[in-house]
Image (tube, rainbow, N blue to C red; front, side):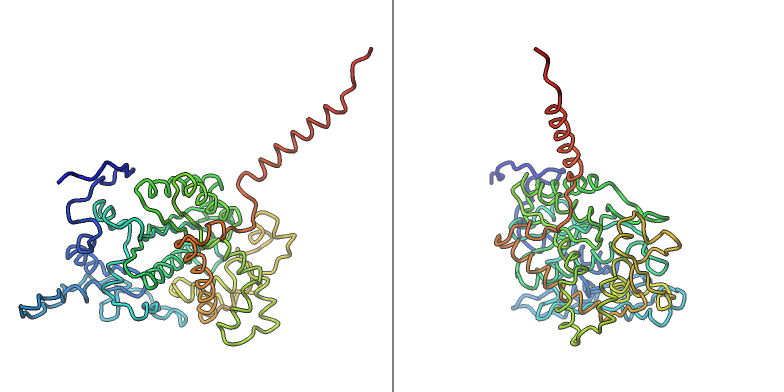
Length: 421
């Protein structure tokens, strides 16, 4: 049989999958893959920590043959975050607020094996397995957030953890709503711009963040992937713009759909636009004091501390309940590194108000808002620019400087005295 026409995949991916491979699930996640996942105890999608070990053994027998299902896979090596029933590695006693890491609810009415076969980790796929995924019904989700100081009580990776949480939640919703679709989660990219600089913060120039994501998205687009989303947990204005600009460049250059789905959410979160929906999800109105506190929240305060208590309570420092409010006027917020000046501890807002139930309610609203954009983008009803945040673009200030220089030159030319008779 003749091979299909040559198609430039880019990045050294296979041009032609082996026969019978394209579009067939067994080639994507076979017994070897299940054994590997079981041995690692690695989650594939939130809430599926040891699914491979529990689901691999019932290889469905042929109807005409009777056989006894083999025993479950071999025991896994213990890990510190082993699922219930496993033996966790020794660790120091956790404070009261650090209970067992909560499991996210599984997608309702979904066969776990279907979700396992539909959700993939990019770094664990081989090139042929990745190339076998159907391009028109596969979504690749990137997570791009910096390492940044988040006060004395939260880890440097808050934004990355939040962005990954968003990515996994979006992936599960896509799989739930679109049977037969696949989602590939790319490794988290710890990069970002407009971060508060101190020990541990890794910040990059806005243009560098944009160009890195253009290169990343371009590699996926050249490989034929048509749907690329960017998830993010960092609210720096320049960072949000870089993600949106990278998406626009890749979309235009390769005629694919690449979209940043969290930029406009950050704007709506702290502008108060979603507050009525938060109250509905909480089942009660916010008090006047809570509304004021939320309006003052911006970084490592009420909301981000709540999020970490929800998704990684083991990483929240013991003294968060005792931290005093950190309030800053709009004028002070225009000063670089303002929460670290004059004795500031690197947070903005009211971390002592944190509550995982508040995080659950707000995340429900934010995910609903994000999925409205995701559905529209995947269906072609909305342009990725629908999720654009209202911040200055990367070239805004150079453009302003250029226009100013031209204007000044024109004014000086107009004032230049004419030569005498």
